[in-house]
Amino acid sequence: MINNNTKKYIFSRGIDDYFTGVHKAYKFTSLFFKEVIKKPFHIREVINQCFEIGIRALPLITLTGFIVGIVFTKQSRPSLEDFGATSWLPSLIGIAIVRALGPLVTALICAGKVGSSIGAELGSMKVTEQIDAMEVSAINPFKYLVVTRVLATSITIPILALYCSCVGLFGSYINVHTEETSSIISFYQDAFSTISFLDIFTGVVKSIAYGLTIGLVGCYKGYNATQGTRGVGKAANQAVVLSMFLIFIEEVIIVQVSNWIRYF
Amino acid sequence: MDKSRLQHIINTDESVISIKGLYKSFEDLEVLKGIDFNLFKGENIAVLGKSGTGKSVLIKIIVGLLKPDEGEVYVLGQQVDKLNRKELDALRLRIGFSFQHSALYDSMNVYQNLAFPLTMNIKNLSKKEVNNAVDEVLDAVGLMDKLNQMPSDLSGGQKKRIGIARTLILKPEIMLYDEPTSGLDPITSTEVIALINEVQQQYNTSSIIITHDLTCAKNTGNRIAMMLDGQFLRIGKFEEVFDSNDEEVKGFFNYNFIQ
Ligand SMILES: Nc1ncnc2c1ncn2[C@@H]1O[C@H](COP(=O)(O)OP(=O)(O)OP(=O)(O)O)[C@@H](O)[C@H]1O
Ligand SMILES: [Mg+2]
Image 1 (cartoon, each protein chain N blue to C red):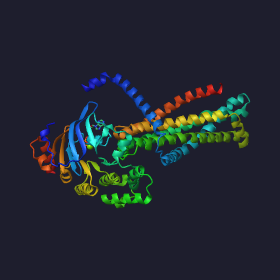
Image 2 (image 1 turned 120 degrees about the vertical axis):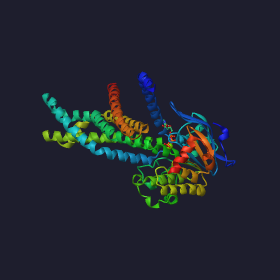
Image 3 (image 1 turned 90 degrees about the vertical axis):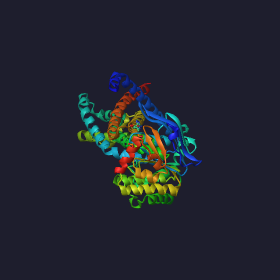
Image 4 (image 1 turned 90 degrees about the horizontal axis):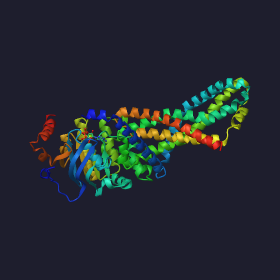
């Protein structure tokens, strides 16, 4: 009988689950914004988490940023050569990396590396009742675990994104240098001549949004993990998939908005 | 539940936990179906019952981890499900909860596990005060040499005892033990039983001890409660509870007896 029922209501139950899920996520997010402004701030734990996240993601971001810089320059060169405009290369690369590639590459790497580990960590704490253990010793686990981690991702990811842009530009310079032997100073002067304050500002704002997303999604999935060890794997996995999806949506929206501002 | 079957033996005036008509279900599954009892000051109650009857759910409701559907749950004079976060935290500081699977923080070593509840709840403690408190509870559970180990390097029984130590560090007035002896060998069980009794004496706590183990129930409980199908079938002194022709009660007794 139960089987029949579940079959019969499979759609309505799916829709139900979807909306309760959205509601839960909304409540989780608003709880974050409520708790983040309340004492105690657990500043030391935030700093710990920042270091942990930074160290975890740094090697991969260095490598990827560097390669993206080289590859992107290599790929753009032929098209610019057709117009005899290779001297524009630094400014083109500068804009592309600072506006789009740096923050996006950083966000995607952190979604994979940091988001999954937050999801798995909180997920295993949840299923082994460590979160309940905090709760019963009168420690607010949401503040201690969630708020600190989300703050840490929102602080660290913008910094990593700026770093990634610099490394990307350096990779690009290596490529430019081997072809045209320009000096690094003139390369960076060229690159930054077209980058406005607005570019860097939107890059940082964007990265903060990505950081918030990665932290919130990772924590949300981990915090609501069920079904024992299987749930932990699921939480980690879903944290990556969902945060990448949301990052792309945010990217589209933020590009739109910043373009409006730019041409206003 | 048939009230005449309840047999209150200890009759103190002050009850630290008082539960009336408690119901709790998860979706379609009815777990608790009308629990009534009082835990008196200084008393240990051992709750016996089959796996899945809702023993863990009961004590989780007592500390406010789960909300009751119906009924009143008073702990130290306060109705648990009506408290706000701050009041609930204040109450929880007076309750120790030892988890069925220990629930030690596995990113922290034993020292940090024990110090964590203390430093998070009491500001401006000196390093020395924290060390002293940690030493005291570690000594109480007899695991002084494990100070710097990670929980993953401890045996099941050691984890249980560290879990108990972690709750003792806040000097609770009520202790809730969830299956303190399950999965332990008889010798370690005996040690844990002795520990529970010591805690009762030394810290003057009132406790609820959830267990499957009759030896543990008999040796720690001033009263025994037999939980069956979401209700307390019988509650009273050990002999009184088991002086019964009830199949389920006898089943419990015989099984432990064969062992
Ligand atoms: N959070 C929850 N959500 C849904 N069902 C739950 C939840 N917690 C417990 N249950 C269900 O409630 C019933 C009682 O669970 P509980 O953990 O209290 O059993 P127990 O008496 O402690 O058993 P054991 O001796 O095996 O620990 C079980 O059937 C369990 O599936
Ligand atoms: Mg249980």
